[in-house]
Length: 151
Image 1 (cartoon, rainbow, N blue to C red):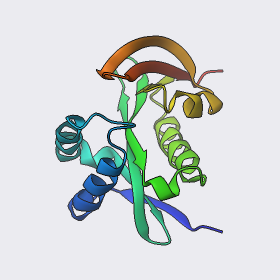
Image 2 (cartoon, rainbow, N blue to C red):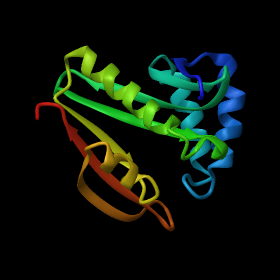
Image 3 (cartoon, one colour):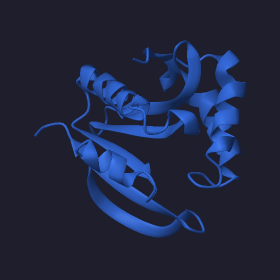
């Protein structure tokens, strides 16, 4: 059984997260998104969670809570290809959803993802709001989906 743990992002995680991000390019992310991701870490690193299996970083994901309209969100989640399909992604998503729920401030959780990951979020209870072809890059569509926490 894998030992999956989570902790808040630290600056020393940046290099390994960049390497894992690049392993998910171009299937899940457009190459030009790397700069956006690194900027995100610089600004919102306090809300980024690193996933570890047996104390090795295998990926991460961000989350946010906007109290003004009771909206939470998931962002920038990805895993090392070797960790995909092992349950780590589900554990990472559930952990971030639980963090948002625990705040008591969000009524819904938004995720903006692609056709490659939408089915994953749908299994977690997210429902599709909208779909835009070629939004992130040619061949990578935007799927906006929401999880209602008040159901």
